[in-house]
Length: 204
Image 1: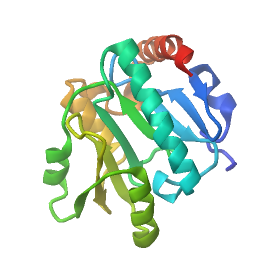
Image 2: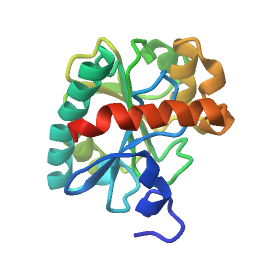
Image 3: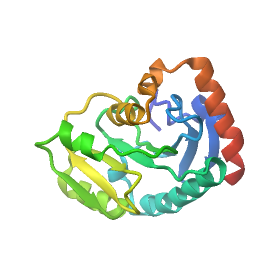
Image 4: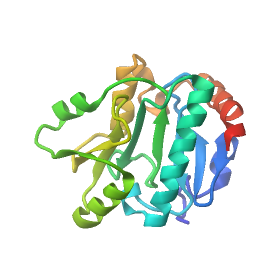
């Protein structure tokens, strides 16, 4: 546990808690870009990014990820079209968290345009991410587009602004005002995350 880390203290997100697993929390995020169903997968252990996790933790993530996708599909009739992580880049909370958003959109070409000098590569799994990160020890952006079946893309060491991937997704789905969770209408946001908890908690 890290002092003053909001993701290390369950009390800070208890109202938004959707589910608990051995090593992870499933939480409805603040700043619902979609109209509900936007979740975070947060490790209980304080760790900087998913690339820095233990192999046993990553293996658990891959199981939970499938459960999250199935639950979102059942309730929102949409598999998460976007899954992403700010791997120590653009994090507003310095504790690893993976985003699941039930929206169909593509952000890959925008990222290529924004960072033409940076290496972007496809990977098959989060275990591959862990192995690459162990060798490279570089910050990264990780994402899965709506048309990536099973795999991910990684952009290594880009100079991205805070909340970069959130902002891209919000723009891509036509809700740019929701790009930063801090700027979200608090009443609307509470309504959306509260409904998300009610609808998805039964699956976990």
